[in-house]
Image 1: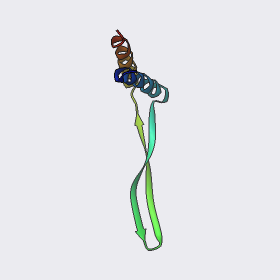
Image 2 (image 1 turned 90 degrees about the vertical axis):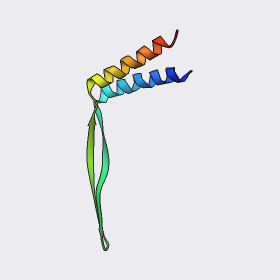
Image 3 (image 1 turned 180 degrees about the vertical axis):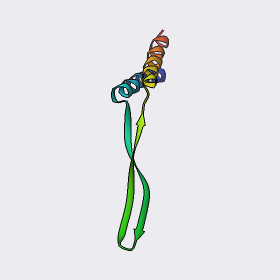
Image 4 (image 1 turned 90 degrees about the horizontal axis):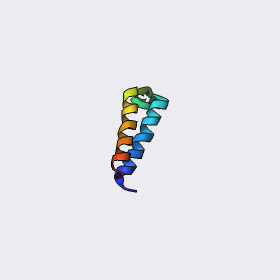
Length: 71
């Protein structure tokens, strides 16, 4: 299996996951303070939305790479 075929399969899988979930969230530490024995930290939850066109485009690019390079 060559690198182009692996890239094509990864694009198809990533595009499918993007369409299924529509985005992902992660937690980011923003502030932290230590005052004597007291420790305070603030964690923000960030959300990244994946547009539908990006998922469809990744699937299309993967399919094109898979079939064009297979000849």
